[in-house]
Image 1: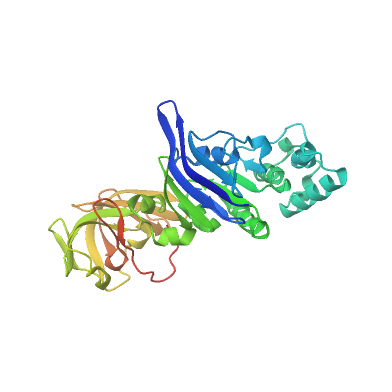
Image 2 (image 1 turned 90 degrees about the vertical axis):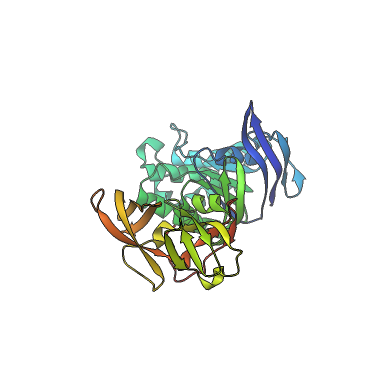
Length: 365
């Protein structure tokens, strides 16, 4: 089954929640909706499911116009952030509920419930009720109810956000494997670039109800089509520094000069915005063309085994994504190394004009 959203708008009162989205999802594809809070991910999923009609545009499934068809008449399942299970029913009956509504035979229900529970590793919990389960087990139960239906379209609205890191990692891996063997379309919403990369498949980058870019996930990460896509697919957001390019060098505010990469020499001279990922700025030089900058420390955000180090040069701020726990003092003067061969180059309108060649396998976003 294919799904095609054709020029979709969704307007509520004076608010435009979705604007001009045209998106085609292929049969058997795994698709990530990546965007910040209020980007329009949940609204878009509700439109896909038939829970709400679009204000303008058409929705087609397998070439058939289903724009006005309600969710009850579509073969769709949805998993939410919250652990939405029937509290008085056992795990078995929770998973079986869509099949009972579809009036499947008892034998078919039993077979599919047990197969789905085994696939999710909760087959030993079928007699328990949700309140006797851990958070991860409750979410697996909710997923089981969505998967057992064998829907054409399965929607996951940030389903792992309320789980701890290890559980999220385990369930993410399981989801990726589950959908390799299914021919349905899966759509998974997240605010986190790392999660999108971990899930793979295709990614649609959303911002303020608009589709910025869609394609294979790693390609979108490597080749954003503009500053907004690059920012959405970076955690913390990509560093952007305004500068001037000539045939020979790049200049930041008439003060910092360095030779431009050979790949940039064919670009017209002029004003550009240069992007570098936080994970590519370092505390030690990694290449001969790294630019040494003296900066002052603003704050170090420690997140588990990583540190987001916010610093400021006299001309611009930078953020470094560092492995390990780093604890420099506020206002401490340190040196950082800016990789001039890893620059994304954007024109004044924010469109990409150059992406750096990949050197090595750094997957930090």
